[in-house]
Picture 1 (cartoon, one colour):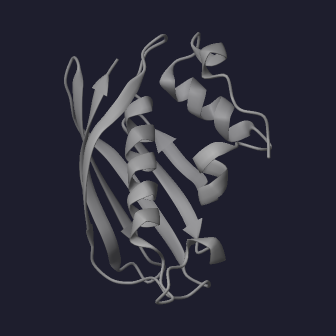
Picture 2 (cartoon, rainbow, N blue to C red; picture 1 turned 90 degrees about the vertical axis):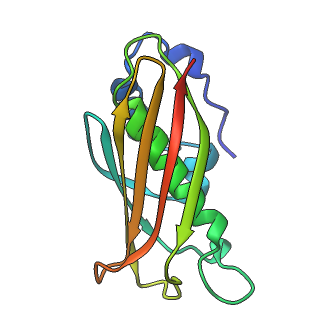
Length: 149
């Protein structure tokens, strides 16, 4: 197990710079390491992840656990919010509503997780995320809200 990350040491960075720093780490720790996703693209108000099914994420019926899909969406939507944060700003996700459209059963499938900020107010932000399989079919989608703290 890797050492915990002291996020207070990153408070002098913007949200986008924190993502860059975190993704450059050899061992990211926490949920990022557990999920095992790769950030493939990010910019102002959006992120794109790539995820491959892990044995530890399979449920008793042999499919990707819905909680993992919801966590991937929550993580990506939170990262999309981070891309808009200034130095010293932080946020929390306040809610997420997810819909599971089709199962993921093959370890060969590469999932694309996309998230974006649809509205950024002074304090609250509205987000949306999707997961598509390598055939481009929608697997899951979510909407959520974040609050700057």
